[in-house]
Image (cartoon, rainbow, N blue to C red; front, side, top):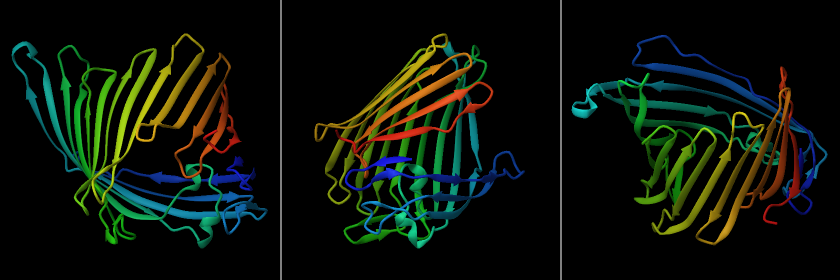
Length: 327
């Protein structure tokens, strides 16, 4: 891996990562699904951060942690409604489905602050929490359709931590995280509208809201998202961001590309941009991705190249950096 965070925090180092997992769905009633899972992760680095995290030192370091959990879906309840009039023969199914997801990640060791951070592989934190979700879903099926499609879904969810508090505002803490709600409407095949809201139960104020619209056609795809953040203490809006996504994929054309741009409407500043181009030939393919990240803890401008061979799959990715983002 090649990293340039500015100053002395730049250089190349090696990383080896092993992450086995196993899960199994227990046999039982069709309206109740229980799936436990177990795994662990071992990651080795040829270099580590110095104590002040401003440069690298030539000392290898490794990190080991274990993970486990269980997913419980149900008991589920449903009812089918049959429409009349011009929609004769059309059926609408309402499904109510509670879910519990428990996750445990053991704490690595005391040297975890010296782990070089390149991507999400290196940013794993200890956890001992459960997430409860109440899901309402509507499915519709007309006589002309081979199967049912989802028309609407509404999820209410909240997390609870058995260890560290999930919320802290002005000295007050809570083991409960924000209360969230997400609404998804699918007016037609290939299009969707999503809305999300996060509510702080500790201060009774909004934390965030978002609305997005997406369209996916056989050749083109596009999306627009608006996100707003609020101060949990006062409830005042603190951020306003917009994201635009565009993609082109034609089955009989060898070149595909994707564009993703995020802009801060509050500060009139570009936050990030990503560009991906992929060529797929008869026997081989190559994909190139460029990222300019400016609104993260470690701004960066980097690239990623992936080569795939027929019968072998993808080769290890080639990664590199152009230095800190924002240039």
